[in-house]
Length: 251
Ligand SMILES: NC(=O)c1ccc[n+]([C@@H]2O[C@H](COP(=O)([O-])OP(=O)(O)OC[C@H]3O[C@@H](n4cnc5c(N)ncnc54)[C@H](OP(=O)(O)O)[C@@H]3O)[C@@H](O)[C@H]2O)c1
Image (cartoon, rainbow, N blue to C red):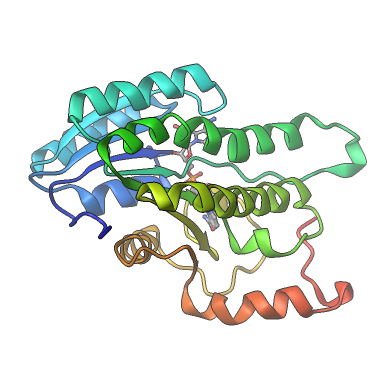
């Protein structure tokens, strides 16, 4: 099944109030496109809604926390009712925090897993019966280059992104025969609120706008796993092969 064209789409994006999710919504906004935008910060979603509606898109904002399965499921189903279809769901909401292992406190790491892994499940699973009933669709989630190797100080984050990739690989086996495409998007560094706090060098960092263009191209091409920018496609095999002592330290 060919992915739908950029216009005439109904696209639901989690984590749309900032960074990559917001840039994706901006890149998609056009007449004929219906957008469902989910995040916790209602004020930012409202401002974005106004901007995107001025460009001709229909926009439905949903203020919810991806850690809450019921709230996210209700938002996905409400969007499907409002739009009349569901072409693409992008589970993009995510956080990145250091493990802070010396504190011995699991709460931050639990939060990373709850947001980045359970949040993806909460966002994508409710779309599956809706897409099956309509005869197909596309599911996407944000992994990361960090999901290909455990890194010092970022265990929970790396584990969360490895889990997303494995989850999507597993789901694809079941969903592709039903006409549902399943894509894991694995960026390197992207300028956003998430990376603004990082004190260390971030090689090949790109703008959120460029990341959005890369993502849309990968989705149109129906990629299964897409690592970007291109330099990171060279870094990933190195990252997997390099001895521990040569790995960068993030804590
Ligand atoms: N930036 C990078 O270098 C990079 C690299 C690889 C992968 N990624 C992944 O790309 C995705 C987007 O990252 P970003 O850089 O755009 O981050 P960002 O600028 O910090 O934006 C994160 C978005 O997720 C939302 N969010 C966070 N926790 C949420 C929750 N519990 N419930 C609902 N929404 C929540 C935030 O909205 P609210 O705060 O309003 O809820 C915001 O809209 C993440 O999954 C991240 O891991 C980023």
